[in-house]
Image (spheres, rainbow, N blue to C red):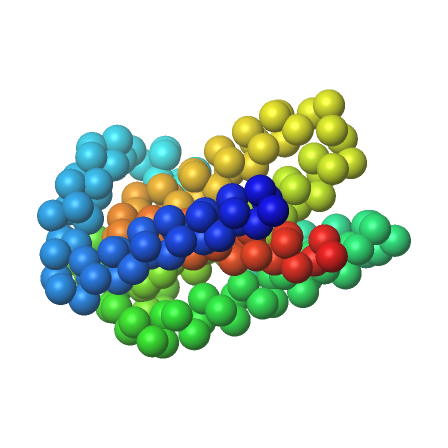
Length: 196
């Protein structure tokens, strides 16, 4: 009963946060937040860092995620490993639907790489939290004594993927926040359903 209460309370809080972000974007009130965050990140730009981030951001891209999903799915096939590629496919499809519904255009004139499609919520942010978060969950069940380390590395990886998208000028900060929020809603629900 207590777990159910925590689950629904978490879902409500995250749902409200996502709703607020959608409202900010729809009302054109997100710009001050997006500009503030972008300007802060922009001051750290260097050619060397840009080169690194252009490579690092691929950790949240479809090609790398598919390779990891299939590899881990095969490796963990006897321990529900098949759920890893299923998880990736479902969250990617869910993100695509949200992008089509909200239809926010990407930033212009600040992008360091070319991306297609709509901007909100960020696919990299949403998919990485759902994908790497689920892998961290599976690993933490297997290596219980290293749970803090596993979640720490996973959290840092996810956070930096999100920041890389703002740095490269292909997403607004509110896109990233929305991606993390909806990705977390999806992840918690996927874990709850798949553990039955």
